[in-house]
Image 1 (cartoon, rainbow, N blue to C red):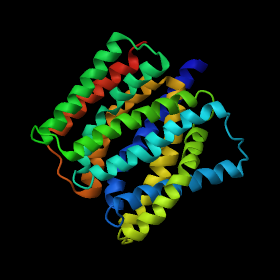
Image 2: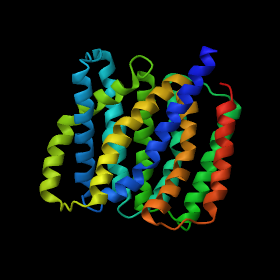
Image 3: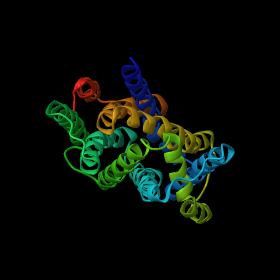
Image 4: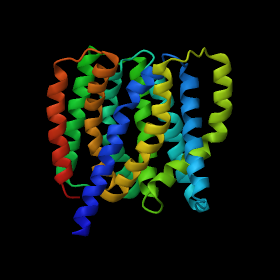
Length: 290
């Protein structure tokens, strides 16, 4: 059945996006070994914009209608500039594992903004499972921080809001244009801001090129900010923003694995317990009917 096949493909695309995003925090931590926070964010945005702009130019893609540019501006402000900057500032004093579980609240935030923005009405079962997953992530976060929220947490909660807004607008626009063009034009739109910031930041912040720092900035630019968002927006367009967003409940758990493998961070006993609870919530939300 075409509808079932499209749903499965959309779920796979959204899952690939989550996999790409799960490497963002470890890659950012690597990038911070050689770049300052402002340099890292500006350089990743410039590189991603050059990749996207090159693709748009090579394929002779016509710019979108004027009515779509406000939505693209929201995407750019949220996922191209706001989220990377706030999370990079947080990772200066927070571990990637802690940041990952805080950002685990992103699926619920996205679903809430989507309901307000698009008028979607997920079922009661969907919301119960989503809230349960968010509660598990929040409990894990508070337990890891000793019951106190930090400045890094404030940055991360701000990142949740701006990223959810960008995801919501991006998912809506991906219904009327290809997902890669959504993020491509958003990146190009942010280039006039990112380019001078990159030039200034590189001249004022120390830069030390290492294998880790170069690999980190290349991944967040090409993998997280371009390729990952392409499949993510395509997946959201195919299966709907609320359901796609719930797949991100797995993202902090994947990031925990990467933080151990790539950064040698300590993984607490609570992580597998949270993983089990989150995976159950994902299964329920994917089966729930709106």
